[in-house]
Image (cartoon, rainbow, N blue to C red; front, side, top):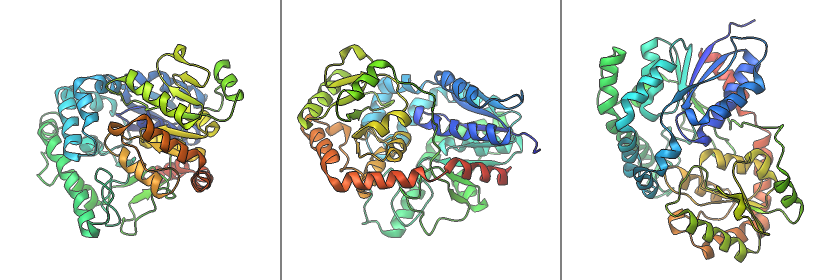
Length: 429
């Protein structure tokens, strides 16, 4: 029997960032007997406990535990600074600078929490934010790897997801764009990362070139957890970038409440509308826009919202329903374009309408349109009832879209990204 390992997964972010990491954690526990420590916001403790209960066996050393971070992504996005971040759209300087303004005041506390969470780990993996896996692994003397939820490794094939997907830049311009965003991210995080390395970790400060340059020169493994059917692997990616496929967290035992089951059975498949952890500045106005669009498109709707009492005959308001259960039962899904929600919609094989707010969300909307699995994205800042109604009508009535979405869903369901990621981790540790 292989010796169980302790693997720390840094998963700072919203629900869409946590669920793929939990899917990987479950597989490592159930198939390898590992102990996985998920470093994430404390608000996700119930989700982590449920995932642990689903796979924990008789071995007390195995299982999933939460190392809670005190930062709450929902509270952050509800704040004035969070609203400013959402309004920044696709400007990478505003996006990365907004994160610095939000996380800067709490950086010392969060770095201490991450350091404590990774003690005793045999492997540390996580996203490129601050390049925390590298600093922590260097301090503890253990291997590390990066997780990419979007194609963030330099390529000449397309621009960085944070900038518009145009062919005008050409291969050299595309590569320079990736490197420029790496530099912006490093220069914004360097003022609090380097003092932490020096004063707490006992490591030398890093140069102006930053940690990404060194990671690529050394061939640090990258687990890119998205589907090659959605983002074909660029020919110029090096072998250490592993395109695994998506990591899906399923809840096979989930049962719908009677109200939801009755609504689904009472008419044709509805259209789902939900913006995940995004917080519109005026939720009531957004709700009116969404309902007017659904009426104009002549479709029934299931809308994510805080108050199910506001449901009516044609619109059911729900709180949290597993996307893996709900989306296959929809005629189409409308959402913000987060990586996790996008993957769930694509896997379900139904048309997708993306209403992006910021960051990589416009990129996923453009990929959906390029794959002809949905219409062109409708940026949230430009959202009106007529525009959304047109997009929904196109999504549910265009045969080419429904056929392409269904075919793409079949390909994604045939992949096993979690198994590939587990095999790669076996090679890394």
